[in-house]
Structures are given as structure tokens and as C-alpha cells.
Length: 106
Image (cartoon, rainbow, N blue to C red; front, side):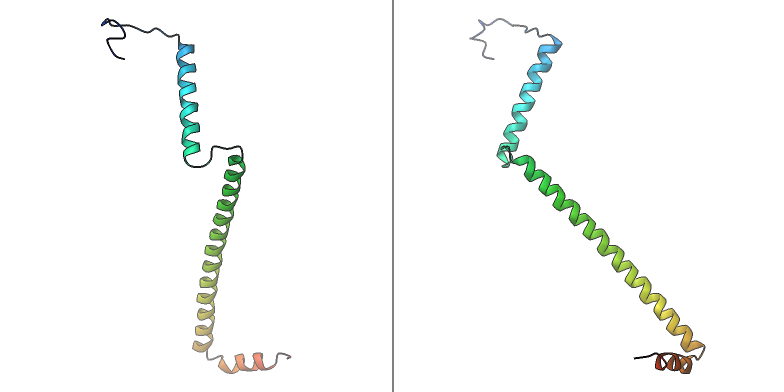
């Protein structure tokens, strides 16, 4: 504060813990509301907007996890398929494979 307003004397302000808590709580609430208004979330519909955003984010996370699982399963299946094909070639089962696949009904 300006010393001229106080007559040049040092002034101690005494607040109870309860009054200080109320003062800080009010200042924090006003600051939070101003920050929310600044980013466009200061109205009553903001709750619905945030819930929608959380839902979209959750769906994105689920889709991302599913995509990774599917990719890993595909890679593992391909590797196992190559191992089986390699084993069949190594054991010279080519003729047997031809017989099995030609005997399947169409």
C-alpha cells in the first residue's frame, strides 16, 4: 500500500486463520473462474463440454490400444506362419500340403 494513505506508519493487519482461509478461498475461486472464462469454459455448458471431451479421449485411448494389439497379433501370426511354412519346406512336405489343399471341397 502507499505510505501516504497510512500516514507513513507501519500497520500490522491481523486476521484470524478462518478469515485468512476465507480470503484465500475467495481469491482462488475468482482466479479459477477468470481462467476458465479466458479459455471459453466459463458457462454452465462447460461441464457437458468437458465430459464430452473426456469421452472422446477415452474412446481414442481404447482405439489406440486395440490397434496396437491387432498389429502385434498380426505380426506374431505372420511369424508363426513363416515358421510353419519353413518347417514344411524343410521336411519336404510340399506334396502333402498340395494333397491336403486339393482335397478340400469347393
